[in-house]
Image (cartoon, rainbow, N blue to C red; front, side):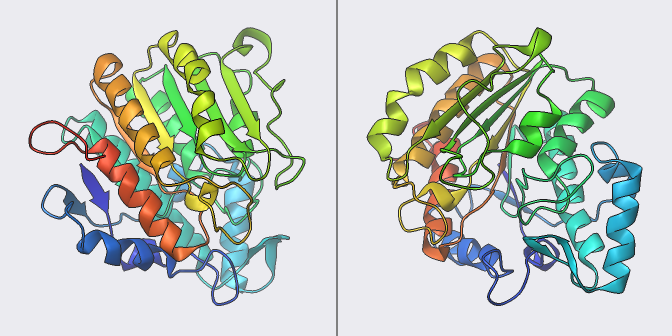
Length: 317
């Protein structure tokens, strides 16, 4: 397992008072360094991405706009995403790091990788949204297609917010299996992801949105797993992207789900078992959201415990 860590990656955030601050990485990193996972992972440095990388998913006009606004260093990209000097380069570190993880997995250097500050799933091809400048999830999917000739991809997302930027970009793509368990959009940003959004045209049925009511617990989450597993078993992907946002845990300040960290642990474990059976174990895990710092540490560590078996091949309960 490769884990990407470093100041350049931690820097993605919007300062004091903003829910997505640059201290989120350290909340995870301090807990990781005191965990039993140390010594079972290889630590990799962040990688600077390029405009060409961003254009795999985003329009050239939008990438140019971010660069110009970054040089100005003031204002807002959208109502939720402030501009700061150098935001363009900082956002491209997330992009470059995720693409390095894709490359390392596809070259066989590791089967699994985790990028904690990533999973920015709201940005569309032409705009930012919801704290997300560049959509590294969509960029990773396009890189797999364009650079590695991988067609069949599973994207699974347990962040409290619907991954609208990924869903709508690939709504008509039958080779992207999209599974998203999230808080019902009637109660939470971005207001999308209803059950009847299941793909269109040839892709109808390849997208599974599971909106849950505020206050939903582990029991309700796991009651949907047979449906999730059934859809997965029909797909046979070549690569899996797991967005493991921590904002679905109880106690997040801006969401209303009430999961324990067992959701992250069991999801990661089950996805790992599925990956072992279908795609050589290839999984890219992305940290996603989460605004309670203690929850960030718990959710991401439990995700890693689910992905990394112990020396006897077992994951800890």
